Length: 276
Image (cartoon, rainbow, N blue to C red; front, side, top):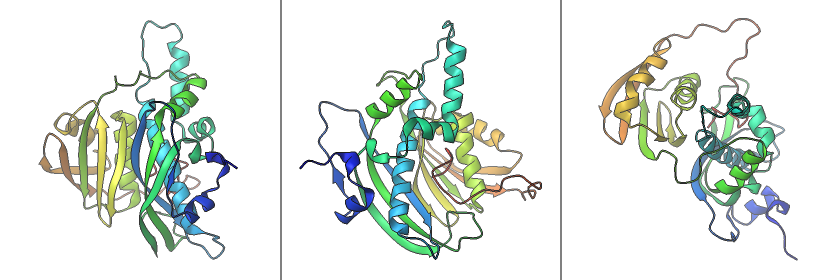
């Protein structure tokens, strides 16, 4: 009996060694994405490893969708552009994007593999003070962008045809990172204000992050805008600026405590477009 991709549960796939591969009919637009999957470890946690892998898969799918959303069609002469922009804005909201994509990452993941199982350790990625231990994995996921395009198109979002997107790739190395909100704010600015197509974490360690960027501009071109966009919260000191790599030292200012009733930064999950 043949079992469809969605018919196999994540637990069953992990029992096969964490690797999945299915044939794809015809030439498909498939990209490889590495993602960090993090799950809190609590006394009632059934399988934090499975939860971490699932979060890594969801984040890889979300990264790819955000990448495609950055290539939406913009035609100032289109009478319906206002409606298209409304759809785009809604899709960029994490809850709406999740509704459009659904909750099953295996719809879009053609294959994946756990490339590093870091296991349980002290809380590093999350900021939920109630969680002391978390499970961390790094997954390599091959995501079918055509399937995501189809889902976004059915939702009424117009995308730039494949092959016409900006393709400048570079690395951003952040040194002296402190609290999670600093990383989250830099990534938010890169995605939302600088409109980068992809901001993918490649290496994460205490006080340091290495991000792979895909954008329409090189590091030399976007450095000044990035610095100005976060100037009220931190200083970004250039350590080296190359055509394909930017290394910055982060000097975050003291953060004001949140007002009563406001939301604190929660533990890392895939519900927010700025989580990794």
